[in-house]
Image 1 (spheres, one colour):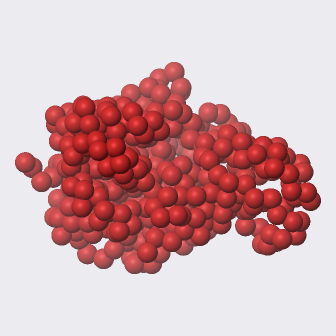
Image 2 (cartoon, one colour):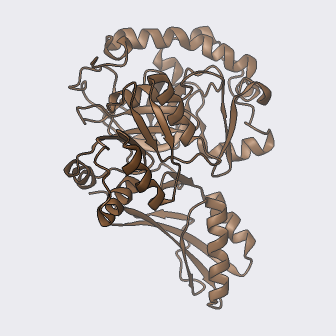
Amino acid sequence: MPPYFDDLETRSPEARVARQLAALPAQLINAISHAPAFARILDGVVPAQVDTLAALAQLPVTRKSELVGLQRENPPFGGFATRPVGLLARVFQSPGPIYEPEARRADYWRFARAMFAAGFRAGDLVHNTFSYHFTPAGFMIESGAAALGCCVFPAGTGNTELQVQAISELRPNGYVGTPGFLRILLERAAEQGSDVSSLSKALVSGEALPPSLRAQFAERGVQVRQCYASADLGVIAYESSAQDGLIIDEGVIVEIVRPGTGEPLPDGEVGEVVVTTLNPDYPLIRFGTGDLSAILPGLSPCGRTNRRLRGWLGRADQTTKVKGMFVHPGQIAAVLKRHPELGRCRLVVDRAGHEDLMTLHCECAQADARLAEAVAGSLRELTKLRGRVELVAPGSLPNDGKVIDDVRRYD
């Protein structure tokens, strides 16, 4: 069994950087010529002169948090896509809402490499629990699995009982989805006495994977690897058998910058993850993800030579991720707009065991169970996630401008 997906993973770091920098001017020409947003953002830039990482660092950062407004002004993609909708394979909507294109190319999101590193091979049956509704997550896995020659059971989200039944009867080798749902499936199977022992490997994303949870999976015979990806960029980094950081994908250039700026930070310093993709259809140049991470020193013991991220270390802005879905301050503002009886609101995101929990605290002159129920419905509709609502007295929430407070701990 080959240890690596291809030779790109083991080339020298110098050869990798040289190849990426050689491709960068053509990507800039493509973006400026065919994506109106970049024609504006990169006005005056001479692509041929952007041939070093230092030159790349001089270009403006476009942040994910800006996409909602930019897409509303210039639908559907804010002027960042190089192809019209009619030439695409699919269009998706992620919370925000943010619309993402999928072009007609094999393994568009580059998931095959991450799946290969997690142990997936041709002929495997993959139990895919990422959503096929609105968001691209389910199809991201489909494209990677197809490139590897795997068969996919499109389980999607929810329907826990039916999913356990399908696993026990179809006997898939591997699972793909959030670690939280894998835990739920394994626990439900144990309660029912269902045999799901065919699951021996998993690729998880969308949530934190604490060491304690990874150990629980290992005790049940499931080898779990994780990857870091987004609907805009595809796979950014993935874990190998070394379990020593996340190896940056070959199709992107990653910088760590000081939050709120475009200034690169030294390796080891925590900052915002900024990604430049070599995707010709959606050529995001210095795209600020809003995620915090840091570059690890040295190379992975597994033999892959690309740089490594420490993993997800939080958010550089108030946008956060709950059960694999982004929640934006604008969505909380939309809830508030629907219910004028409310004053200041704050969404608190916490964890109970290994499960993410949301509680929306709302200032209101009168506690009203029907209002709380209505607000919970609005929260669910606008974020696609369930959360509790607590009505509190006016003036009881801090006046500090914070709309989303992520208090989760992963130690």
